[in-house]
Image (tube, rainbow, N blue to C red; front, side, top):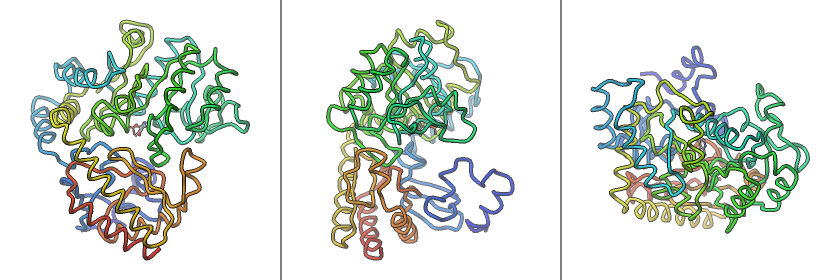
Length: 426
Ligand SMILES: *Cc1c(COP(=O)(O)O)cnc(C)c1O
């Protein structure tokens, strides 16, 4: 049996960087990746046979845990009736209806294969609908690897953006305005300056991609009001939060209805499936009804859709799942805080439902600049000690941990105990 390191060396011969998505490489914690063989419930097992309690959950989709029985049954049944037609199936409508009924801001939906594709399409739709080109995003929010969203703030507070990756052209970057999160003044100024050229504002309603950062009270409402006042489209990227923080997502939890919503992760039950949707009049601008082109050979794939239906049906029929996730996650939060305090390690823990981040700093953490003040070396050491004790955390300070309904109180308490031992060693 190959070791993780041998598997990585072999992978590097054939796969660029040895991984199919960069965060998997473990560079942020100064290490090399684990290769997984199996997962069941709250646990995953690597190819060396080590078992871990998993807080990554495939970066969010596994709210029911790995290999959840209803999901696996649905996938198997669907696959036996062909993996793809490239033509409509009734199950797509079933999934679409579940989404429309759950999300206040979604009248119509379109299914895609990845969150990246869905945000890209939502932006094109917003541009087509408004006839404008600029987009506002927030530093530290991630919306997939779409060119116009891989953009960093320009040098001045209100300048247009700079490419945040080689290969993104200056021309594309200059169509994006990047602002600090949780700062109403910044968005007011941006709209004063560029308001009549802005097609959309896109935001994570609870940020999860710079670590978890909830919006301050009234912030989303202000962003939406300023956006709509200027005739621009307000887009909530709920790829992470949708069906994660609540049935119906952050928009239901925070009681704010966006014009467009982007979904992914949980809605695919661990299969490649995402979606964007929103107001009927905006969605009507999509081809074939309207002039905005969007398509996909495998969009609405029947196997992925069957997994999504199974996962969402479980969540809809068992509202107790969200209550249980809250109790488990609150217990984890409390245990981590107490353990760190007892060992004199400064931490700031941010949580929304079953997504949380333990920042290695005093806080408060309200935006990317705050998040960056964390002690990433300390996090890397903590990550390693946790892994050695059988707890698999996201391999970066700036990511969310996810608790699933498959986690038990015993799992959570084991993680709290392990964390206290880790804090003592830091
Ligand atoms: C994960 C994520 C995406 C990108 O989704 P992919 O399926 O990885 O392309 C977009 N937005 C948010 C908020 C995400 O968390």
